[in-house]
Length: 457
Image: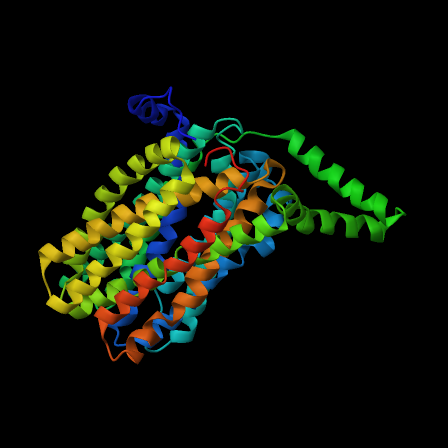
């Protein structure tokens, strides 16, 4: 329900909370690795002469985001020796994964795509695994910045997290594209390899900033987890080394799932999972091939950096914050319906661009419209699943819902390049199909919208 007592200006002032700055940084840390394995990797492969299908199938490395729930219980409970005691449980995991990504970038700087494609993709997979693992604890740390009874602050935090994610992704993309173009113009043969070393410096700066993010130690959470383990152990009827291990594993892996279905009921929980899986499939198909489309239609790396990354970043920030205000006032579900309809309409703008040919004006309009839509959709989506989680299993339940959403975007969208090839390069028809893909998710949302148990509908 809309809070009639709170004005628009009061809703905007929620963003003044100092916790929002910490959440902004966490979002940037989460978004930056996508620069590496999405736009940068795709363009690197494209400029080395690899096919659209190869680039599309290379995107299968994103599938690890769909399965990070499988190891999220480990992130919730296992501590990193020494590092956890020094900087905290959540931050220790983030730093460890950032180090893995940094080492992977150094490795990429020695690889040629045409000569070592398998090795290149393998390193990309390592980056994706580290990034997906990092996301588990980043999201948990973000949610834990806000108290459970602060529904409006949670919506604002979701908006700021999205701004942070797109800041890491868009501005990181600007740095990557301009750096690559600068090195290319200098005549450096391995200009992408040199670019990845520069991007490694960004990783180091983010880790320095992470040290200023407060981490709350919730002793009660560990107590509740152990209580659940004890209940499982009592039902086993005996206590010994084997049953203790079994109770621990069952409580770690099964507890979050049981809690989710118990809270929502089987039918509603299944409906939620269906919606989460389907919501952003169309956007993912478009996003996976967008940079290839821009290149084929005649835009340079500089053009893409300005319009798709720089201009898109500004648009995303403004409308993400507005989307957060809308979610605070109209509710997350209404905002998702609104964003879903916009998603279908804006994908059609890319079809128009494909049919008319290279046009900087149409390019700017399509990018702005797409970023506005993505901003509203992502804010509502993040706020929605953040409000659904049980704080006893923050990382695991959020990872479950987020990974299911990612599953639709990654496993299915990996065929995007093959779909364009099957259409014989008919980009217009491709974008029309991406618009149609939005509809099933909105049907799922309509069926469950009046029955979901969250603080802000």
